Length: 328
Image (cartoon, rainbow, N blue to C red; front, top):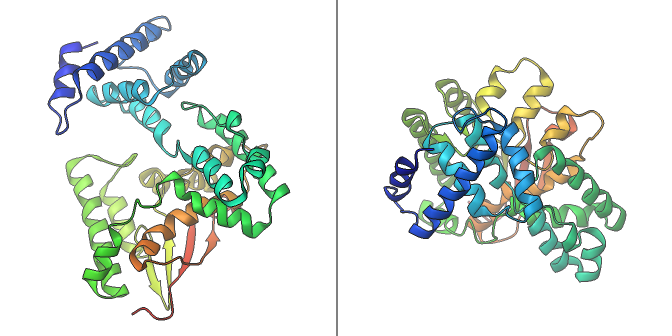
């Protein structure tokens, strides 16, 4: 382990890591290195397989904290071991979804019904492998559909919106007002999204969890509905950018295209498992996420429809967001 190099990496950041956190980060990486040594691996050669085994140990010990997982992600990125960095990064992707669903169930239904569906003691631990998350999702959906109407399930899951705070998109209102119309707002939104992708491509940096190539940029440019959404009459037709677009474009097998398209860590592995399907009802969580910036921009709740889902067998996920009649 390169302790001095790691320290410089953490202190030379735009937002330096505090000294006490650097000490704890270094200890955790050292512990992971000792764990790897027993299986003939190093920090440079470790991958998601070793990380998942180590994460289970941390869970059992009650040490599965954001700080400890952040230590591993930071060191993996420092040494440019992407086979380790991306799986660790995946731990944080949607990690709050079930906790936020627990909160939303309580807000919409009250504590008693919430605890029938998702009691606090059933909340999955941080660091749970994606292959195990599928079983959690299946059980929660089974309880929801048994207890609630389809409309209530949709409403509550949409309110989860990938686990993001409700005010996460509050800056969209100002952007919309400055744009002056839906069409101009959408135009600026698209230009900004494409510019961000091109910058990631040019800099060789990650767009969330994925690298952006020329093929990825050209694909997004050819699909105005992807990433930012496309106006169709008085609706916005929005198709999700694939979770791993480069791999999605290169895949020749339809099942793998669906797998690379799916953003949801709580459902994605079910696509590769014929014995454990997850209902597309869970995709209403993504529907809420997709309409969230538009609701913030227009400062009012909006209706939406799910028209495609990889969990239904499509190779992409698409939503229609209905705009108010009185907006330009």
